[in-house]
Every structure is written in C-alpha cells, then in structure tokens.
Image (cartoon, one colour):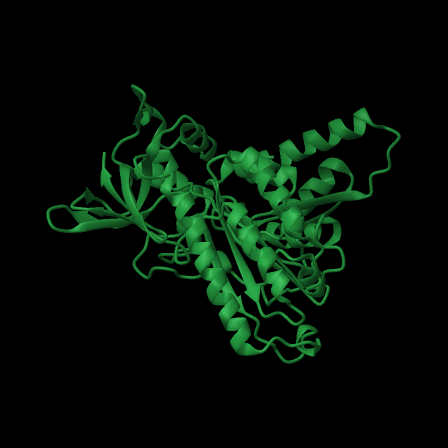
Length: 414
C-alpha cells in the first residue's frame, strides 16, 4: 500500500485493512502483523526511530497497532524485510547463503544476507547505502547531506527531475498543472508511457547480467513495460558439452530459443552477452558451434574472455587444459565473428530517428555532443556522437543515425 502522509493515517489504514480481513475470514488464525517501513527501527524497543523521506521521528507504531488490532506487531526496515522475504521465498534463491536486496522507492535501502544470516549493523541495518555521497555538491537529501545516492536514483528523484524540467508539453497537452507539489511517481510513469520526453529522461531502467535460467515470462513482461529495450545475458558458450562442464544446463539451441522469446516481447531489443574460450575440455568443434551460434544470434554487443583458472575454484581443477596460445587464437576468431554479427545489427539503425540521452553536452558550432540511445549501456557499450549539435547534458534529444563504427553511432540532431 502507498505510505500515508502521517503516522496516524498509517495506523488507521492498516487497522482498517486488517480488521476487514479478519471479518471476511473469521475462521482463520492470525498470529500477528509484520510491518516493513522505509526507515530505521530500534530492535529492542520496536520504536520507529527515523524516516527521512517520510519525516517521521520516534513513532510508537507497534504499540498503537497492537492496541487497535489486538494482534502482536513486529516492525522491520523495508530493505531488511525485502532481503529476508527473497531469501526465504524467492524463486531463484533456493540453496543460496548470500544475498543482497536493493529496495528502491521514495528512498534506497539495501538488505544483506551473509552465510544465511541478516546483517545488522549498530543501527540495525546493513548500512545506509542510499545515503552514500555520489556528488559532494549535489542536491540536498532528506537526511541533511548533499548528493546522496537516493537523490539521483529513487522515485522521488525522478519526480523532482520532472518538476524541474524546463518544459512538460506533450501532444498539445501541458502537464504544468501536475508539475507542482501534487505530481507523483505514478504521474511521471503515465507521462512516460504517453511519450513525454521529459518524463522519459529519468526513467531509463536497465537490467544487467541476467542469468539465462532466470529470464521468465513475468520478467520479460516487466521489462517490456518498465525498462529500455536492452538485455545483458552472459551465455558464456553455445556448446552443450562446454556449458555442462561449466555447470550450466543449456546449449546453443536453447539459447536461440531464449533470444526468440526475448525478441517476441521486446522487438527493438539490443542483446549483450559474454563468452569464454579455452575452458578445459573445449574442442575445435565446440568453437565451430559457438561461431555458428554467434552468426545466427543477432547480438548487438558481446565481450570475449580467455579462460583464466582461479585458485580454489572447481574449474581450476578440471583436466584437459587448452593451451593458452590456442585459447587466445580462438578468442581472436570469436571476436571477429562477433564484430561482423554486431555490424548487421547496427546497420539497421542507419537512417532511423532515435532518442539520445546526452551525457556530454555541447554548445554547437565545432563541438560535438555525446550520449547514448536506449540500446547502449553506460561504460560497457558504444556511444552516440552528435557532431555540431547543441545539446544540454542530461536531456533527451531526437537525432537521425547517419553511420556507425563498431558499437559507436554518429547522428545528426533532428
């Protein structure tokens, strides 16, 4: 449920919902209520100590809820609760002993499980990750400091960015009435779905390093609705024999089927992957299988690594080592094949109008602006260069792609 403005409203809403539930199901046994909140909870007293984004201080929520409902109440920080619920009930955490959960809403919190135990520092939290300083002179955070992580990457950050934008006009509609204090994150999402460029600027959500076995239909549906058309899936190889030696249950055919499912939901998707050559037992026919896969997979970007045994790992103890010079030669061939395959992907963008997120602005003239389209991840992929364009850093502009070199695009502003 959305967190109400005041603690009194919060208690009232929770009580009303719980009482309605008990009335609707009178034969069920209710042992207690667990409440997760975005702030610090004193574990000994169960007092809700402080929530910067809610501006709540020293609230006796446990006692008030117990009096109102007659049930035992336990309070917990929302990031800790997120980590525990994922550890206990998560679909892909069976057998895991270590886990980090990042909770992003009005703020940012991190819950951490190490060796099967929730990490609790002196304040009951794994650490105030949302209040790590990213920019010393950045916007002021609710905690009192400047430039904290959550003033750049939370729901409230997206709303602030939208409010401060110079224009919020889309399709003849002026959203300025919604750019005052009553604008919500849900409003910004709605405007983004309508194509409002100013609403899209802070909402480029991108998931990296997705495990192939974890790419479910539910995840793809969420990506199609909320994320940019980009997936990073480290496939590692296409030979079933090599993948089994790595402890992975896949092969080239299954990977192609996975990519088909991804493209059915995200038709404009850029797929990034990584591959390893020289894994113990890799044969020349395994490399041929990998080269054939790359030719067919339609990848936009891929990295190649030569197997490097690490002490203490199972792979380092495997027999049938591939000589380093052979592994390097195979990596060279694979890189060339990836370059040729990626060129076919980027050829499709020449002549197309794209939206570019500007990361290095320019005043025009002889300068050039540099940014990325949605299909380019920061730091690891190429960039889009706009020669002579006047563009402000942080803005999203429209441009027509004129050419590409490797993973880099050159475009002129529309």
